[in-house]
Length: 202
Image (cartoon, rainbow, N blue to C red; front, top):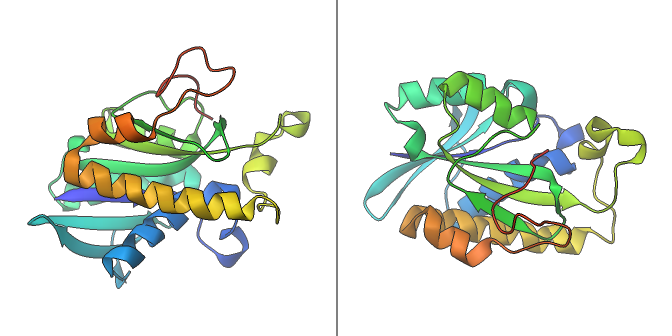
């Protein structure tokens, strides 16, 4: 079984914020696969389907971002899965808006949702799709306020395309693996000397 986890915060007040791109991406994936969130398990909304003969479970933890690991760890145990079966989709304030990054593993880099999952699983060896939300330096260094802000009207068209690209990326990982997705979606950014798939996460 493969587990696809979109990170975000539950509640209508958070729905269109930058921190909820993980939710929006897995919902786009479910729409194109005609999958529905029909129940809850391990404090997460879940949808189920099959891809290429393999069962997939899509989940949106409802523990709030900083405690995402509580739901993810429970789901991994309940499904008798391993971290290698996991794909986590989240926002990333260190990546420019309009870009995606795919990695097979890595540090949390300050992203509290990823940190919670690392702690719950005892490993960072799981695939992650990081969706860029950076548009400018964070005012006053208040990253928490920035990630909970909604997108501007000018940004929404970019975000809509980005969500669909993230759904494409989920599809490709499930069908052909992380390396294929890295080759297609990772791009060098300005001021990123480490190149694709590397550099700090926020």
